[in-house]
Length: 399
Image (cartoon, rainbow, N blue to C red; front, side, top):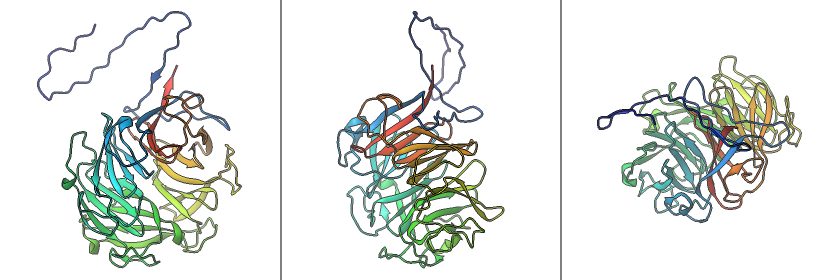
C-alpha cells in the first residue's frame, strides 16, 4: 500500500509510483497507453491490414437513435457530426443542428439550439437556430471559444465547452460571423457580411494567428478568415480571402493561386505547421505550406483503392485529425487511416461494429466517421453512425 498523505481542499498532487504485479502463467496484462509527457502516443497502425493493440471503447450512444441527453448509452445523437476533443477529456459535438458536450463522466448534454430550430438566428443556447446540420467545428485550447459551420454560414460561440461541470444552455452565446443571413450560397470574398460560401465543411481555428481556415467544399477552394481585433463575435471585424485554389474543380499541385482541388472536405494543421486537406474527388491527401505557398500531394495517387504505402491509395477521404506529434489521421470510406513518416497505414477498416468494447482486429471493429484526437494523450475519438450513432474512442494498449 502506498500512502500519499493528507491533502488540503482543492489541492492536487501528482505522484509516480513504481509497482510489480504477479500473474499466473498464461495470463495477459494490457495497459492503456496515454501521453502527457513529451508527446502523445500515436495509436498503432498496420499495413494493408487491421492494426493490433488498438482498443475501441463505447463512450456514449448506441442504443437510442434520436436526440436525448443522458449518460453513456442512455444518450442519443440521431445524426453524426464534427467533434473536438480537449486535453481534459471533454468533447464538444455538432449533433445535427445542435451543439452538445460529452464529459469524462459519460454525460452528454445540449448547450446549443436546444429546441432544434431551423433558421439563421443568433442567440444563447436556447434561442439559437441553425440553417443546417453542423458540418465543421474547431475550438480554442481553453475551451471557451468555438467556431463551426452550418449550411453556408460560419458561427462563433462562447461558453464553458471544456468544463467538466454542469453549464446551462443560456450561458452559451452564438454569433453568425460569415455568410448570408438567408443562408444563400455564393463565391465571394469580403467581410463577414459579404463573404459567400458553398457548403463549407471542415474548419480549423489557428488561435495564435487569430485566423480561421475553411474548406469551402463546393467552391473547390480553401478560405482564410482573419480577425485582427480579436472581437470574434463582430462580423464586420472579419476579413475572408481565398487562401488556396482557383475555385474550379480539378487537380493541380502548384502555387496557392494556381492549385486546384475537387471538393476539399476537411482541413487541419499538423505539428509541422503545415495544413492538410482531404481532397475527396481527387482521392488524395494534400499539404499546404504557408511559407512556400505551395500545394503538394503527400498521400494517394488518385486511384480508387485502399492500399497502404507511399504514396498509397485512397478511396473516399473526408475527416482529419492531427496529434501535433507527426501523425495525421483521416477517415477513408469508413476506415480509420494514419499518415506518418511519409506513408499511409491502416488502423481499422470500415466494419459497422456493435456495442462491445474490444480490439479493432477483434470484436472491437468499428467504422469511423467524424474524428478528433486528444493532443495530450493521443486518444482518437469518432462519432460514427454505423449502424446506430455513437461516440467511440480508439486507444493504444501494450501487452
